[in-house]
Length: 240
Image (cartoon, rainbow, N blue to C red; front, side, top):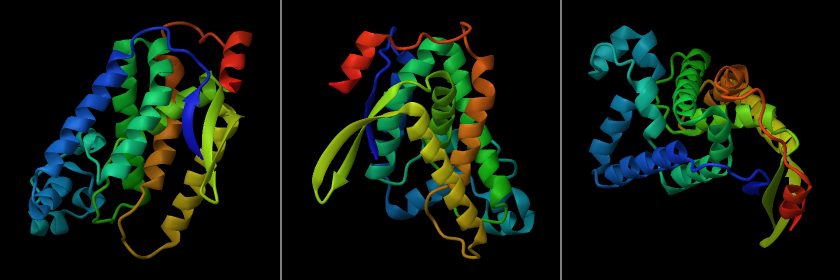
């Protein structure tokens, strides 16, 4: 299911969400300018490579500089291809504005980055000996989804489901859409732990960690007790 829009209108200009999308886009276009070898080095230096922190001997042999904890921030702005960045930024565009509304710009920015840091730490703890870089905004965005799951469970999410090359559009409750997404990440992450091979792919445990962090932290960052729920007119708009 591909999300198209949600039923909660944005009440303020989501300047931080737009800024995050712009920064991710600028970094991605910089990546496109790099030759393949330089891009690999860029990913290894600024992405999260768990073995860099758990296996100092390997890290020294691979040429990693000492420390490097900044990667828990920088990895959030790296993407491995067009589909990777477009899917992440589209999801952030749909759900981020509402969370920015109820948190305020500064709180939301801190919440987003902190969710991304905790997502990266979760991935490191889940696969501590992995030598493949983990990168992307999806862990931080998962934090936004976790907050949305708690704050707007009755909202409607319009989704696209391609069936035999024919697009079908329908509305599902946010609690169902996001709940199924989280369960799928947890299931796939468990399967990934059972695999002895270190392969590139989706960092499922970063998604699980980010979503969980978003649920646990979101109420600490609210600027008001609870967000306004959609009224009847908003429900009608969602069903159009």
